[in-house]
Structure formats: structure tokens, C-alpha cells
Length: 276
Ligand code: ZN
Image (cartoon, rainbow, N blue to C red; front, side, top):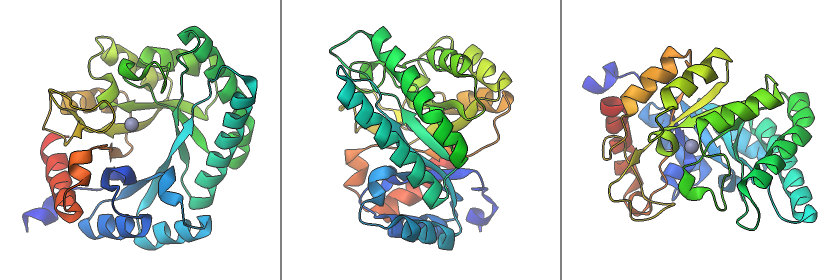
């Protein structure tokens, strides 16, 4: 009974959160649990024809929120950068094919060149793929990543840098993804969220928690409420800035992947309800 009064109409889960489940299983279990949206990890499409993936999502009744991920533009040599462009065009195609209106960009970085050079290549890359994204009706969200990933995953590490890049690109199709895991520590976060909102640039909002101590840089994110991020406060800023989209649970966690995923899903619903 208590379950029925809980509102999960804005709850989306990223399929990587329940990585042991394939797309079909994830979609059916999320839908059965009352979850409303699904973000599809690109690797989760491996082994599926794109029209089959679309049918699975449609039949589940879930809303396809985004495809994760495109990006990884920077590289020291041109050939690799061109390969990245091709890969991003494929990601846009995949998003369109499965009915996801948004591609999340994990922008990339290279330890063999300066962060400024990497940022220049990110800007160049997004501008290159933008006409195709517009043509396909697919929006793209620049997701700033925590600075611990500045060497090889993203040279965009603050919301300010992401907002600055959106200003330079100046397209309705390019905005930001605000992930509390990456941004909670930033003392300019509230101000930059207001700035994103004023420009209608908040395309996505991701939640998980920062465990202390964190055991693994990639795969030790926590359930909401298990760490030290003031999630509800940040959600308040994002919504005060005008965002009314999905709250997307994105938990990369070896510990949780090793659990019974049905039990984990129930814990996600509880953690979402109590702490987001
Ligand atoms: Zn995220």
C-alpha cells in the first residue's frame, strides 16, 4: 500500500546500474517496479539489432531518456580524432534508432597533451557532429566529470567549463548533464546551475552517492544516502533553475553488481524515495 503512494514518475535508471541484466531484462524489471525512464548504456545494445532494442523499450512502456555515451574526442593524432567523430555519428544514429532524444557526452581527454588542447579538440568535435545531430533531432549533453578523471576521461571537469562550452557552441541541441557524483564538491555549483537553467541548458540530472572512503575511481559509487553528497539540496538548485526532467540513477558499482539485482532494484527505489 505504501508503495502505491510513492511517485516514481520522474525516476529513470541507467542500465549500467544493473549491469548484470541485459537490456530486455532491465527494461522489464524496471517497468514492473514502477520506474518511468531508462537510459541505455551503449554497450547494452551489443547483441541487439537497433530496431529490436527500440521494440523492447517501447513494449516496456518506459521512456527512453538518453543514450550513454558519445564523446572521447581528444587524441594526439588526427586519425584517432577522426575515428572518434565517426563513432559519435554512430552514437547519434543509435540514439535515433532506439528512440532516445539525447546523447550524453563524456568528452574525453589525453594525458599526452595539455587540458587546453584537449578542450579545443572537444569543442571542435562537438561542432563537427552538431549538424548531423540537428538533422536527426538528437540533443547532446556535455557531462562534466570529476577532476580525478581529467587525465583520460574528460577535460571538462566543472559545470562552469561545460557552460562556457555551451556558450561558445550556442545551439539549442547542446546542453549539460548535471551529475551530483562529479560536481558536488564545487563551491560554484549553485551559481553555475542557475546559469545553465537561465540558458535552458539543463538536459539531464544524474544521481548516486560519494562513498567515503571511495575504494575504486570508476566502480565504487554508492546508493543515494550511503555517502556524503547533499543530493536533495542539489536537486533543489536544479529544479529552482527550471529543470523538470528525469532523476536518473547511475551507479557504477562492482559491489552492487555482485548482488542479487532484484534486491538491489528495491534498494534503489527506497534510496530514491528517501534521499533524492
Ligand atoms: Zn552521469
